[in-house]
Image (tube, rainbow, N blue to C red):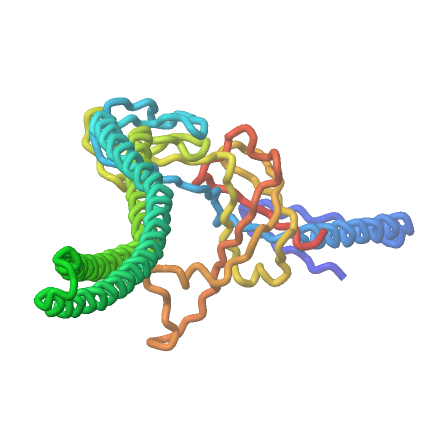
Length: 419
């Protein structure tokens, strides 16, 4: 039974809600239990479940991070010789090819050094050539001297034998002359006694006197011949001793050849040393032109014309744009299914484009390990922090041809861990 509504004097009575009729209630209940609506609701739930599954599979199929940037090589260009810069051929942010001359240093001092080294080398080479030629000449001369000394020894030995034979013959002649002289002297004594008795003629006695004198002279001549022959033997001995001494001196021929060969080798080595000095001088002259080692963009140029530069001094940086990659700092929890070789899509903020790539390598330690002051969890209060690992992602061939990408650009890579 409806409750009566009280009214306050001076106020209007509130409007009462219309009471639903029994027919309206029945109509509403019939619509609730309509099979078409039930099928529509079931279909909607199925669609939502399928969409949810596909979304879950999609978001679970990759790992991404916004802590990533493009990296590349930064080649520091420095001179290898000192000197004054006379020519500067590049500007900041200029694109240069490999082999282009970037800076030229005054080459005058190095040209003089090359001329001096060339003169020293030519002198040493001439000395080495002469010493090399002297080796066979010395070998031939010493061989001839050795052969001549051997021949002289043989000749001296033969001369000794001949002199000794002559000496023996002279002694035999002397002995014969002495025997004849003794007979002549004895005959003279006998003939003297007979001539005094006048038993022989004076002529026979005179002949005996002459024969005695001739015998004495023959003895003197034989003695002189023997002395001369003995002197010849002594001379032959002297010639043999001289020949033997010459033979011993000539016997050092191999050592003399070795000495001459060693001198030639020393001269050749000295020439090679001068050649090395010449090569170094020529290299230093070539180093007066600072060449671009790679193709890239000149950056951070600090050298100016007229500046005095030293070896190792940084003149500029050269960035090769063909060789860039992505360094993506993933959380350690994201590396669970990440592997080398997996495909990656790289979105670059600067270009607004997607680039294709793949995972090249995963580092051996977290980034914190390479910091200046790595954390030491064994001291103080320990708070667990999710570590990050710098994963290297490289671009597929042909993706960086336009030189649009620069080291330092922010990127958002997606690594497809499920294909």
